[in-house]
Image 1: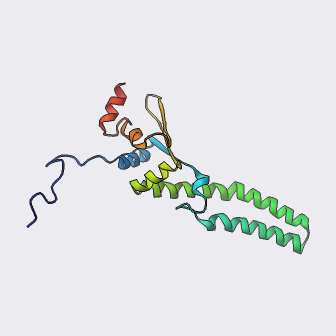
Image 2: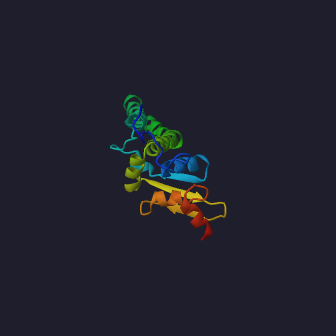
Image 3: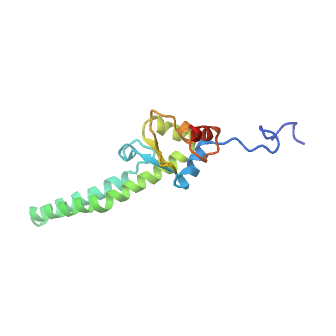
Length: 167
């Protein structure tokens, strides 16, 4: 037998569970109502929880090593050509993949736990943007409360959303 009140719903029987802002934010992002902004440079730096040294160092080392080898073994013209082609490859092909991977890892990391989201929000790494159906645009950055931003979104299920829509 369980103790009286153990496992009881705090809102009483039949009451919906309390609404979680982070869950509401995940739903709004999945629905395309809100876009999550990430400061890629800060998150793609040593010390960041989503930093991957291999994806940053190995391609650059490959380009520089090829350039030095071309210069030493053939001629400096070849080394310069390899370096130029390597820079083009890095900027055109590698960097966009790194940027997208850092964004995805950061979004997964931040949206997995409210404490992580709060920590990244407080450090200014994250921002939120929403374009509402009436054309109004809303933005929240470090200076703003992300919780208030989510609670005021139309259709978020919070009481503030109805008050914000009326004003």
